[in-house]
Image 1: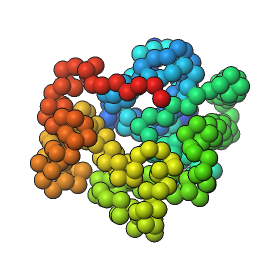
Image 2 (image 1 turned 120 degrees about the horizontal axis):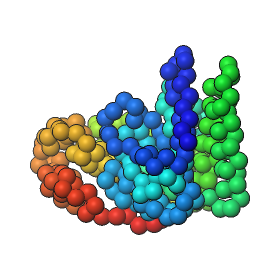
Image 3 (image 1 turned 120 degrees about the vertical axis):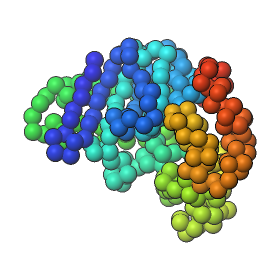
Image 4 (image 1 turned 60 degrees about the vertical axis):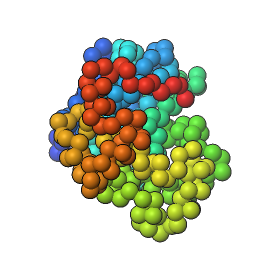
Length: 291
C-alpha cells in the first residue's frame, strides 16, 4: 500500500508506505529525499542499516529517521512508514505544538527506537486506519485533516520517547534547553566545534549543559558535537565524490591532518581507509546492538 498527498499551493508532500518490498532510501543528495521518515516495524526483529551502520530494529518499535539519512531494511515488507517534508509540516516552525525538535528529530541519539506495548500497538493500529481512510477522502480539507493526524502521531511518539529515554529528574525547562542545544548543533556543527560556542548562544555555562546531559543520556555535550561532525563526515565520504580535503574544509577543519586525526579517533580508521573498506564491503562495518 502506498498513499501520497501533494499539497497544491505549498507543494508539500505526505506519504504513507505500508508493506512495500522495495521500500528503502539510498541517495544522500537527491531532492526527493528531503523528507523526515517515521518507520514502524510490524514484523519480527530485523536489521536496519542507517548510513552504512547496522542496528537491530526490534519488533513493534517505531524509528524516526532524519532528512538525508540513507537507510535499508532487511524486511521492508513488514514496515509501515510515514514521510513528509517541511513544506507539508515544518516541525521547527511548529515546535510549540509537538515539542519534538532536538529530541525526536535532530536529537543526540544516533537511532531512537520507541517500543509499543500491546495497548500502544492497538492505538497505532487505529491511527493507521484513520490515516488510510483520510488518504482516500479527497476534498478541500484533506490536507488539514492529514496534517492534524501527522501532528497527533508526532505527539504520541514524543510522549513515548520521553517515557522511555528520559530520567524523571529532567524537568520540562531542562529538556527544552537540551533540545535547543541539539538543534543549534544541527544548524552550526560545521562551524562551531566547542561546548563554549553553544553555551554562549544559549546564555548558559558549559558546566550547566554538562550537568543536564548527564541526566539526559550518557553523552557529554562535546561528544554530541563530535559525533554529529563525524556522522556528516562519514556520510560525505560514503555518498559523495568529495575529497578528504574538501570534506574537512566543509566541516570546519583548516588542515587535512587535523581532520584525518579527528576522523580516525571517532570512526576508527583514516578517511581514505574507511571509504575503501565501505566501498568493498559495507557489511564489515560494526553493528550496533539492541538498545
